[in-house]
Length: 173
Image 1 (cartoon, rainbow, N blue to C red):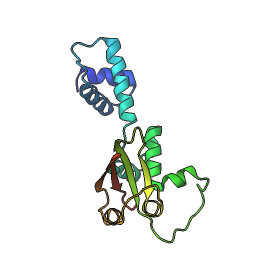
Image 2 (image 1 turned 60 degrees about the vertical axis):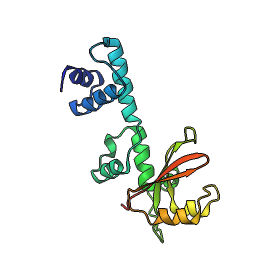
Image 3 (image 1 turned 135 degrees about the horizontal axis):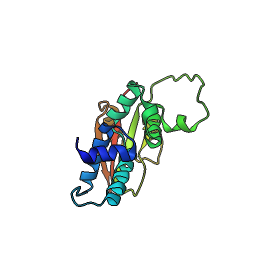
Image 4 (image 1 turned 120 degrees about the vertical axis):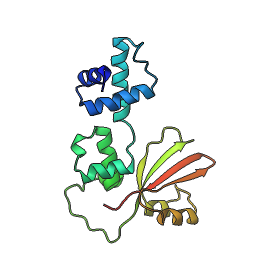
């Protein structure tokens, strides 16, 4: 910890541990702490904190949040990611909350991230059955079988003429 860490914690009203993460992000962003003005320092600290808050969570981070029951500590963006991961977009957007639902079979979920060639497509949680039954996905049977037999948390890259998509198998919770 140094003076910059303390200044970040004070400015953003966050813990020292969180301030260290913001300082690390500022360094990644190329901030030269010895040359920066106070105004620019404050602006860069806020920008780095926002970058961290809006970052896509990994499967491991989402599982940790769920297991530790720390969703209340998440930013709104992170809460949306965790809820979609845990329950699926369909449930999150539905009015079924609070109802008991019975499912005949577990439908494996995948975190799908369009990383190249798809513009600003947002990551989403997709059920295996949706990928198997929808013409929108256009995935061949061999790849779907490979996905279905992948390990929980495993990232599988799919490349087509449009770009690159990463599928990450969600753990069963």
